[in-house]
Length: 546
Image (tube, rainbow, N blue to C red; front, side, top):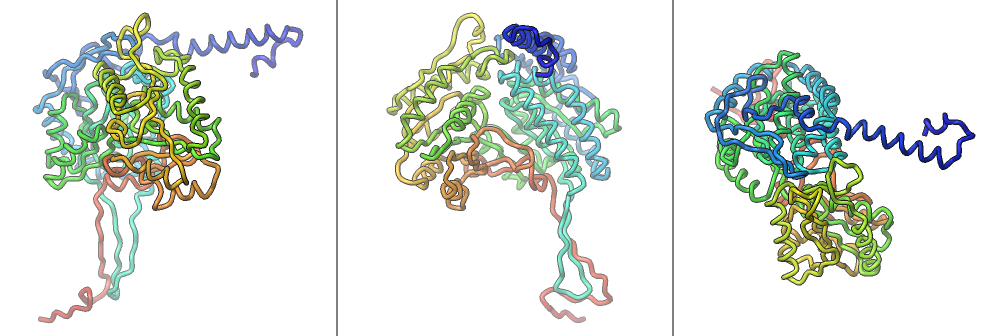
């Protein structure tokens, strides 16, 4: 409001207000839409109209696989294309990664952290164009696109501090003149399989930690969002070249499921981090487990918010609505279920229906819109089938769904967020539908009845309770409360904050990424015993004399 304060006090207030709004609007347009040309964004990020689909860092391989054309769900237009990598290209990337690891692991961890710090600075520089490309290529709102790049910056900042805190423990030995300690060493090559809904953040969640730990990475992004992956590789390339980072520390292979399968079965890749559907995760886990490798799985969520009689409803509604419709309902942490106490059920239901009536659906790069498109026509069909099936089971539609048509909706990927009254045991309610469908249901009795409903699904990622009763909140957080990896009080299910370990239980896969001690999965643990005496006592007092 500083601009208004500087204007003449003789001006009519209405005029001042109008002028301020116009200037504010103009400034916003200048910052967001005026420079929105996708061609300009691609050029800024180094993305060409036809791109090679494999890289060892600075070197881009001449790939010759099937051409993948990235089609924007925003307007249905082709953005650019990628020649996908083949198994031979993957082999080249792996061999270069093996060579790089031998060199990279010897670089002290704080030095590796300094390079990651520079990557964060470079991401700040490219935040706007990369955020716009994320939004345009996968359909989330521009603010969410910027937020995703901010997650990348935040995890890099976290990793910088972590690079000086890769601690082990020192322990007392049972033997005299002996000392024990443990330490962590880099595991080697980390394979990363990411999903379309967070096309850049999930990659960086893994790489920032893996790199400071001394690992090298090979990324297979979703073929539904390949251009953002190329952009990230180009940005990383700038930083790595400036610091003389060995070729192979950051590898990229773009292609279909065959590449993911090859990576999962590759004994040279000790750790595979996979984000996606439960079906995909089971396949990856089986392949990695068969060779006794390690898998870090971030899979489906079927997240619920419990709303108790003491809940602050003005907080409930925005949290529930954003959780359900943000990113077109395509977050693993999206709110799928509302479990509402019967004493306030009708009031909450009416407020939700009213809020949904205010949602604006359209181009996600227009910040006046709340909801953008889903990723593609397959997602649309899945959404329609889910609505059909849940109604067949007895679900009552409160806010109808449907596909939007006409000017602005030419891509055919814009769907209406829907609300359905349903029972928790419905087959469709038990299943995660990656679309903006919210199921609401009643509970009666105390909070334990609500918790039982919440936990009664195969997934266990994110959960929340809205209450002002400390006993209810503590019950929800107790060992007999929420069975999810994330349990929130008076905030929604959607989103992750850097610093906390992100992941869930049951069919969510059990993996943890991002904060806390999630770094340990990227390392191998070693216990060391040192004898600084002049005799050799054996453990457990065993005598062995020759």
